[in-house]
Image (cartoon, rainbow, N blue to C red; front, top):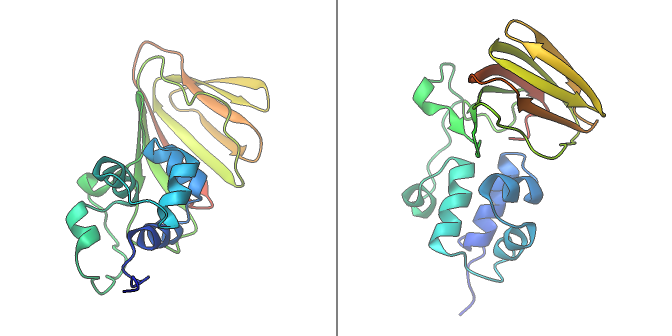
Amino acid sequence: MQQDNALAPGRRLSALRQAQGLSQRRAAELAGLTHSAISTIEQDKVSPALSTLQKLLRVYGLTLSEFFSEPVKPRRPRVVVEAQDLVEIGSQGVSLRLVHNGNDRRALGMMLETWQPGASSGEKIRHAGEETGILLEGEIVLTVNGEEYHLRAGQSYVIDTGQPHSIKNVSSRVCRIVSAHTPATF
């Protein structure tokens, strides 16, 4: 008996990832998995463990029951997004709460970021696009292409994200940032 490809979990996960505009590498990064794990799962070469599936579904904003239920007719994108509906995609002392209204073709991404004291984005990040942000409270060091910028509450930044960049909260207080980025890849 041949498996129906429309119901194959790997193909469904691939479609979910692509609908959100995420690369396999970015999805793996957000889920705490390896790129090769995402690749083999999406090709239906292996069935994901329940814990792995939950990690991926968390990134895609779905529960296990939603993933395994019958497809629902798409809803119109929301105009108002409640605070509890922001999508958490951060980790390791950094909360990144994505404003997502259900429109998978949106051109702009916006986040409410909370950086714990000493938290850092780690290694320099590089991806196509542009990002802007305003610090609501706290202090950060923004490093862009090897140059450091010390920012305090009330200051803003605009960067070409194609250049290597990183952020670190250098203060002993929580830092909060509202940021927007293009393209809306997560």
